[in-house]
Image 1 (cartoon, rainbow, N blue to C red):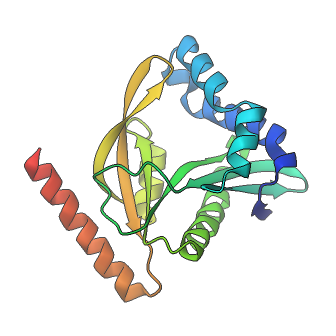
Image 2 (tube, rainbow, N blue to C red):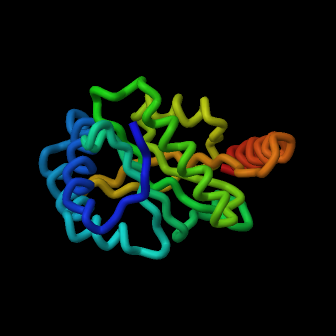
Length: 194
């Protein structure tokens, strides 16, 4: 298995795995119509080419013997107000094909994402995860992410609740632990105010 940054020539393969993994993860819990609308508006080859070439995004691919088995996409824009950081970045997508679940692919993609965030001077990585995706929520919690709020994820015509989670990125472990404690404290304050 190797991980590398995507190139424009990867757009078609990326569009296929993005739609495949999204449908495998969420298809059984959503209507066919909503899935069709979302996939059409999010995962075309042209959209993936635009995202790969965007200066505000980075896409990582995980491959095994030439087969694309996972991907992750980072972006630096549109941070929700519940994320308090000086220079936050978003883990927009992280998906692995089903037959590679539990084999360390997601962890390796996350490691690449954190290193990229550090190179961009990012001090916190945030993400939105569907409230009905316990496997992903548990994975992110294991990696030190904490819940700080929520936002709406439009899936076709269905406005779904995503949990917003954040993890500090620090150059040393003690700074990371301090930042994590601060994030937990802020999350508790937010829940008290709601």
